[in-house]
Amino acid sequence: MRSHLLNDTTAERYRRSVTEGIERVAAKLATTDRPFTGVTVDALAPRIERIDLDKPLHDTTAVLDELEDVYLRDAVYFHHPRYLAHLNCPVVIPAVLGEAVLSAVNSSLDTWDQSAGGTLIERKLVDWTNERIGFGPAADGVFTSGGSQSNLQALLLAREEAKPGRAGWEASASHAELRIFASEVSHFSVKKSAKLLGLSQDSVVSVPVGNDKRMQTVALARELERCKRDGLVPMAVVATAGTTDFGSIDPLPEIAELCEQFGAWMHVDAAYGCGLLASLKNRHRIDGIERADSVTVDYHKSFFQPVSSSAVLVRDAATLRHATYHAEYLNPRRMVQERIPNQVDKSLQTTRRFDALKLWMTLRVMGADGIGQLFDEVCELAEEGWQLLAADPRYDVVVEPSLSTLVFRYIPAAVTDPAEIDRANLYARKALFASGDAVVAGTKVGGRHFLKFTLLNPETTTDDISAVLDLIAGHAEQYLGESLDRAS
Ligand SMILES: *Cc1c(COP(=O)(O)O)cnc(C)c1O
Image (cartoon, rainbow, N blue to C red; front, side, top):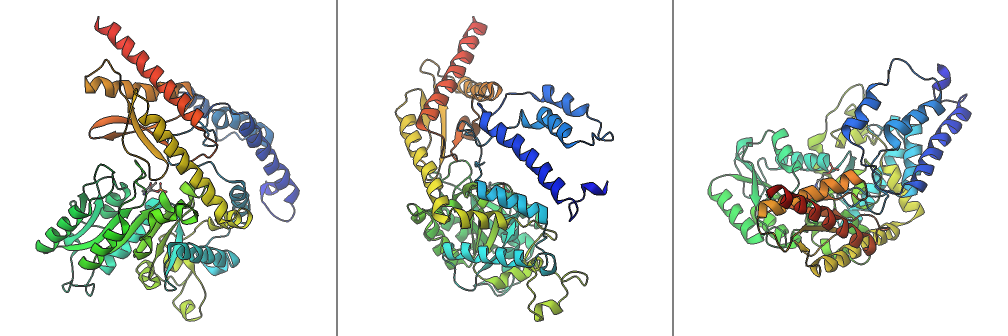
């Protein structure tokens, strides 16, 4: 069994084994003609169920054959140009290479004595990102598992900083008095974080958005006033720079002004919009981000990185102390004096992947401009898709894209019952998924069912968009036709 351990004597086996796996995936990528096979849970579950995990095959080739059957054949492939659903990007090759290296070396980024150079590489990428944001030299941050964790950590820091001393708030605030302000279309991880942080059930104040799906700052100002009048503490404002549903970017400079005025921590959730940090053309759309106290970035969304790759960045490194604990076995206090860089001092995680290597490889091979260009391309594609939708009488489209998302619904000329239109759109999404021809997402706007394209694949063309719109219309019409038959 020792022959399976990766070490000096098994290097050749490692090379053969991994190469064999890579060959399979490469062949798959080259021949995938649809983003999905349309397999159902009922069809797939028994294939996985019948495998006896206590009876190993002892043969890599046989296991890869089996993997084809239980996973590779029916996986949802994000690299396919007609995968248009969620915030999943096709990944760039240098990052996948980084992934292969980091899992084989298996550094753990918690302490210097488990990662050495890895620690410095992560720190350099944090500095690089902070420079792109426009933070000063006091900034810092740390890689995380994703935007949800980044938001949680940012709000933990905000909660601790809301205690005595923060502008205008003398009294020590109890958790029950703390309020977070976020737009009604902010990410649900804000509410989840508030719960984890022990805040009260009504701690997250939902600020309305305008027709453009951006936070209304007049409403934010009103809510902040009310908070102050009620003797409560405005702990943080979460500005979303790229909402998950619409890609809309909250007005960052105005929000920064209000945060300053009311002494609230400003967190920018740029999980989606962070790709603009690398853009030569559209960086200005997130101007004002440099005034944040903390920022969430998901490289695994708009930097074309494999999951996981995310970071939380802070304007003032000192605020990260709220996540610091010292353990004698791992990162004793004396190491701080000895200036040993232990990233665990800044992180909610302990053992932690060297995800930063993927971004490192990407920047070293392609450069930031290369990534920015890919993101600019999908933003432009969304603009073209918006024009297609706006000119198409079969569709109603919600808002002109700020990033790469389109939210729309099929509106049949002859049907007026809104519930029936909802059902037709829901049906079309499901039927499309079952066919595997394309994958689209859905959401609710004003209580009604809408469909959504999240465009993150530069290989997707306007022809793909047109073709998928025709497929959706076809499915919706089929539903309505059958619905008429049922009624008569
Ligand atoms: C995706 C997303 C998150 C959550 O990030 P994960 O990496 O999925 O945990 C948070 N905020 C926004 C705006 C997002 O789009």
